[in-house]
Length: 295
Picture 1: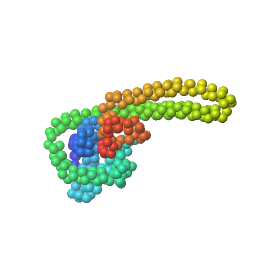
Picture 2 (picture 1 turned 90 degrees about the vertical axis):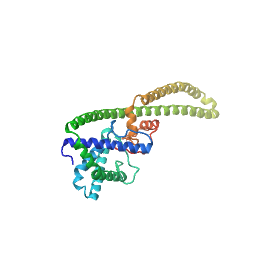
Picture 3 (picture 1 turned 180 degrees about the horizontal axis):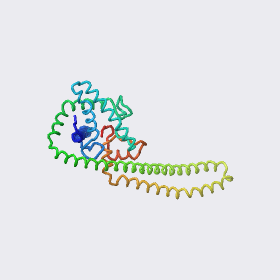
Picture 4 (picture 1 turned 60 degrees about the vertical axis):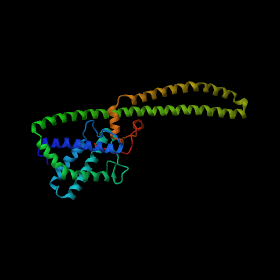
């Protein structure tokens, strides 16, 4: 068990890195290519570091009771994953992973399959891996360890600030793009409705014309005058629609390395409000839906 803050931070760093390696390995097996998994840009997944700290801190005294160790790991990591997913969704308005398709899930944040894997993994860590890692931490000269921790955590917090800013900007861009997409759909509907009304009007007057030629001449002429305005109106709406589509495409083409990384890292990410633009992003990036990732 960690005896001081120095050891605690080292445990967090080591297992956050191991967690990132685990996620990248899983993604490689699943997709056949490298994917920088995790909430942040650097090689660390904080949820793994926090998870191991909780498990080691609470369950180390019970490490010789294998069943209790597994059950405790299963429960503690499941609570952590649920709370993390819930808080991230409330703060950033995105659901970063979704286990809804798996049986025995709770609101899509946790599911039985991955909770069992968490339990088995943490049991193995406490029994086999952590004693080795802890000895290595104690072996590092204290002054060197302090320097390394200071540098690593400075980079970590800078990365955290950049990631938060990227997510907020990403959400704002999605909102703007969705508004543009809605306007494009509205204009498309208006163009179609104008064409429909013009054609329907012609057919209607033609049928009436056959029945009562003399009485409908004035109405027919009035209708023709109205129809002369339709091409001008349609042209204006088409130009507006083209301008909106150009603006929409420019938002896709803008430099967005951070956006693309987040979408690739969390292919099942869904906004609190449905987003057509996010789905468009996924299709353009050829994102395979169905892969799972933690933080």
